[in-house]
Each structure stands twice: as C-alpha cells, then as structure tokens.
Length: 314
Ligand SMILES: C[S@@+](CC[C@H](N)C(=O)[O-])C[C@H]1O[C@@H](n2cnc3c(N)ncnc32)[C@H](O)[C@@H]1O
Image (tube, rainbow, N blue to C red; front, side):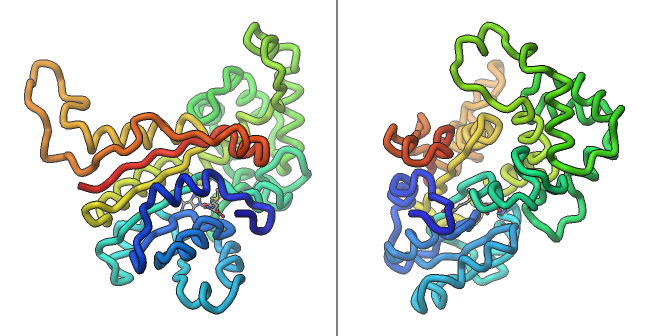
C-alpha cells in the first residue's frame, strides 16, 4: 500500500503474520504514513498507532470517517509501550507490529537532514521535540566517541580517519558539508578493496557515517530493545509480535531477543546443565526471517534489505 510516497514493506506478509481477529487490539508502534495500520483496520482490527515523529499525525487524519474515528494515534516512542498501553486502558493487546527505521517521507524531505544527497541542516531527529541534533552530536562528541559510533553503528572501517577529519574541520552544520568531508577523507579509490571491485553496486562514501549518526542521535537500538521487552509484556497469550528490520544491527537484536525468550537453553553456561524455563515467554514462528520477493524489490528497492521475524506469546 502506498501513501504519500511511502510504500509499506512486506505488507501482506506482516499482516498475515499478525493473524488479525475482528475487533482485536493491535499496536502499530511505527505508524509512518499509516499503510500497515490501514491494513490492520481493513482486516477488522482496532489500531493503537504510535510514532515518535509528530508530523505523521496528518496521515492518521486522512482516509475517511470510519478510519479516523476508530484509530487511536499517540505521539510516542514505542519503547514506552509497556507502560503507555496499560495507562490507555489496554493491559493486554492482540498483536504488535514494528516496521523499523525511517519512512520515505522522512528520507525525502531534505530539511529533515537524513539524506546526504540534498543540502540541509544536519538534523536527523525523528522526534523534533528532542533537543539533540546530528549537528550537536558531530560538533561536540570526542574523536573517540565518533569513531566508536561509526564503527559500531556503521561498521565503517575508516571510522578513525573520518572522526579525526570531523574534529579538525568542525563546526559542520549541513549534510553536504559532512558528506563532502567524508568523501574527501576517504577517496573512492581507497574503498575499492577486493570485495568492492566484485560488486557492481557503488554506495555513496558517506552512507555508513549517516546511518551511524542517525542511529546514535535517535538512540534507535536502545529503543528497539526496550520496545521488544514492552511488547512481550503487553501481548496476550497467543498474540503475535511482528518486526520488520532493515539492517543487521536491528535484526540481530530481534533475533537474540526472540531466542532468549523462546529457548530455555540459550546462553546457559555449559556447566550449569539446567534450562532457564522461567524466562520462556515466546514461541518463535519464523526460525529464518522472511525476505521480500524479487517482485517487491523491483517495485520498491527500499525493501531490499528488509527482514521480517515473528514470535507468538505463550
Ligand atoms: C518505516 S516507517 C513505517 C511505515 C509504516 N509501517 C507504513 O506502512 O506507512 C518507520 C516509522 O517509525 C517511526 N519510528 C522509528 N522508530 C520509532 C520509535 N522508537 N518509536 C516510535 N516511532 C518510531 C518513524 O518516525 C517512522 O515514521
């Protein structure tokens, strides 16, 4: 489903995985343009929609009386769902969907500062009420802090060199200043290792640095960990947790969390010989993640790296 240029990824697969029941209550933790929420509504579910980007509110107001009166929209980080949903009167829900990362609207709106292709202030906040921007982060962090996030969140092998160049050239205020600095610091020739020569795909040299900064500014991985815990807490037995991730850092957290809560032997030291049955709260429905079809990737290249994992509350 496409609304305002955002095409919902793994649309049918994620809705099928939720096993939507007529009048069941479903949390869409990443409302975006509301594509998945509309799908849940269309299959008879009641939607509680959350998004940390308040500008997505407008999409909850479009699309007819029936939809807008039945949808509950909240400007909130999904990391808070464990406390928010009981406060709203829903101690238990029938399903939770998380479609992680940024939307096409956020990426394509130059002034949001997510893209290195358009000149804009270095912002990158999903939630505009948050004070920390990418510019503040880049201009105040130490070289070591920058290097660490480029390495951890971007798997950027030239992280140290880029971090030093940033410190020597700050203040940096715009996306293009940063993108050009990265490009100058690590000329494309330097990136052409053996792997890169084989690959026909050329990615912009600043791709990983921008990904890392975005993750750091929005504390995305901590939100994900906390959001998964919250979702497990509020799901009713038999309720489904459905997560679409877009890079390996996110997918690893989802996979690990599902394993931890479904396999009593996971991470139990060998000498202990006792399964931790008390912590088992989930059944994994997908041992291997579901990926988009070749047709979906062709129609929506942004779906390329997506992975869907599903677990059921016991
Ligand atoms: C990929 S889009 C979701 C698109 C949506 N599923 C659709 O079909 O239109 C991700 C959305 O999740 C929001 N988001 C990301 N992390 C969030 C978090 N921790 N809490 C709440 N919203 C979040 C972003 O602001 C963005 O609007």
